[in-house]
Length: 289
Ligand code: SF4
Ligand code: SF4
Image 1 (cartoon, rainbow, N blue to C red):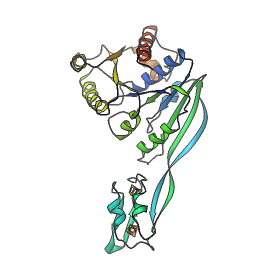
Image 2 (image 1 turned 180 degrees about the vertical axis):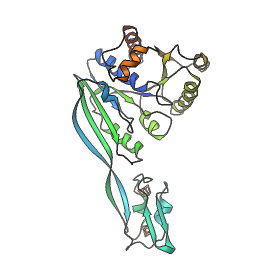
Image 3 (image 1 turned 45 degrees about the vertical axis):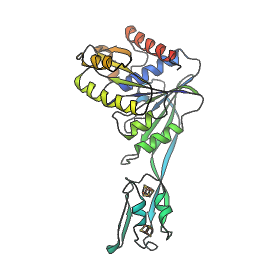
Image 4 (image 1 turned 90 degrees about the horizontal axis):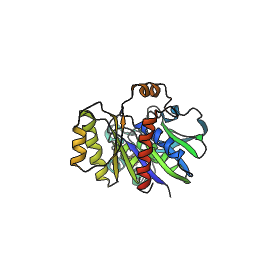
């Protein structure tokens, strides 16, 4: 059984990807088993950029089943639109109009079941791709990339998670930013969530939203403070008051920020920063990871 860890943050730009990639490297160095990194930020997957020796092994197109309405068979009874929980079907009987809005459809199949006139058929529509990369011995990266124009982030993440190799000892999910449905899908059914936050007022506001979310989902979690030393103490006061664990603090390092901008973080980490990641993975190991 894999130990699954999601790395999430309430907003973009907190260093979630840096933390994900560096934890992946750190785990790989000290583990005999297979480690898998899963880039669930399907609108802008960029984890692969940070690996010099990344090799794409394969790619799979992911489809959703989308219904279409045959107007010759349709009686414009509106039953399908009443069944659709996502308001994806518009039926206007006086003008004999019946259509499915593909960007709202969640492929639940309810409309096909509802229609008594055999007027609905389903056809596959691509929502994006899942790519598999080899990043070295015993470590792999799986990435989801949403098709341009598709709004099916959550569905693609669900399909992406199903395709993660089952033999991985540790799976790290790099979540999209925010607290919306794609994030809930990413962190659902994980064993632990790492929340990455910056010690600023905005960072604290977004962190509180994330804390509420993971508490609602009842998943154990801890915090990594990124760019520590840059902001205020408010975040520390909040964490202390809420009895929330700080897994580690990553100090702001101008030189390393430049290395990050060039996509070269792997293998270029200053020793003091490497020690922080080492101590974080040791803490996670103690928790059963
Ligand atoms: S349920 Fe069938 S017949 Fe009725 S409006 Fe929908 S597609 Fe047309
Ligand atoms: S498949 Fe489900 S979500 Fe899509 S149009 Fe039909 S009822 Fe609505």
